[in-house]
Image (cartoon, rainbow, N blue to C red):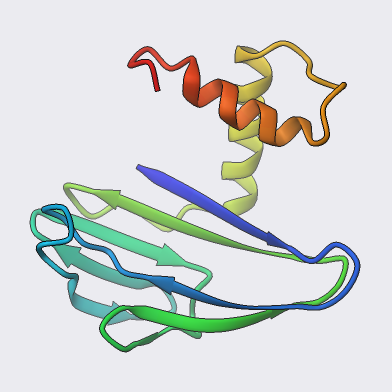
Amino acid sequence: MVLLRGIEAVGRDVRMRVQLDLCDAFGGRSMWGLDDHGVWTARTGDLRGRWTDATDARPDGRLSFEVTVAGGTHHDLVLEIGGHSPPGPEDAKKLWAATEHSWQQAVPPLEDTIDPRDAYAVLRGLTAPTAG
């Protein structure tokens, strides 16, 4: 599973506190084996996780950091979770492009909405083969 999170500062600088508390067994097992080599890796149960673009994060029972995103720019976070170590960190720009391409292939144009990207995300999740 790959989870993308984008923080976009539209008109002014934005400061956010970001936390990751990776657990399995419905929160019963916390993450362990934390390692930071420019990219955070951790384990929880049989799962492995990797969190990129969170290099300032520090462990405090979870991974936490504050980020300031300058107005007109953005900061992407990529969380990968799986049963084995992924081959290499994924590039956020390529993942966003692949996601948008997939949305465009699966859902008709939705220009008459406040933000078509949000509408695509909701519709894509609700139209999955597993019924969302």
